[in-house]
Image 1 (cartoon, rainbow, N blue to C red):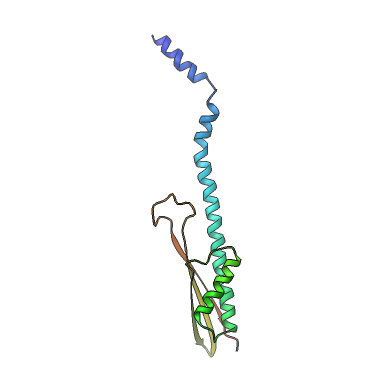
Image 2: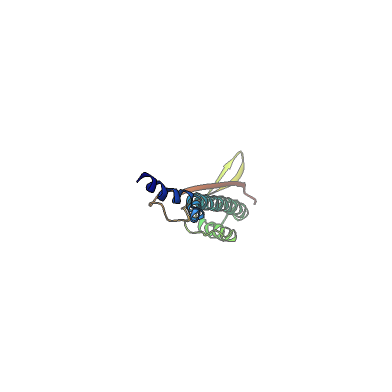
Amino acid sequence: MFRRFSGVFGRFWCGTQGATAVEFALVALPFFLMMFGVVEAGRIVWTMAGVQYAVEETSRYAALNSDLDEATFQTYAATKLSGMMVTSDGLEISSDFYTANGVDFVEVGGVYPVSPILDIFPDGFGAFSFSASARKPVVD
């Protein structure tokens, strides 16, 4: 009986017909997780750069047009952000004018929420916000 039993397992052990499928099953999940991770990390870095660019451009715009209101700055930042192919949904822009050592400054800040592109995680897992700010002297 032992000889018969080892013969059945011996055939499976020496057979190579399904080896490729088994190797793919073992390697596919880590490979796809790594690929999605790289894509997600690239998307987050691109979004961070886009928000920083939009905030810097808005601070330049505010320094030249200090008589405009915050809603105009919000619209301007959304326009600049859409130029970077990032949606402006959730972008919050704030501006503050102040004087330091006799020089008028404008400081523009932006907060942007980011959530994972793959919705395989529970709610709130992986979602975060990042902020950007820029300060420029006001030009009269």
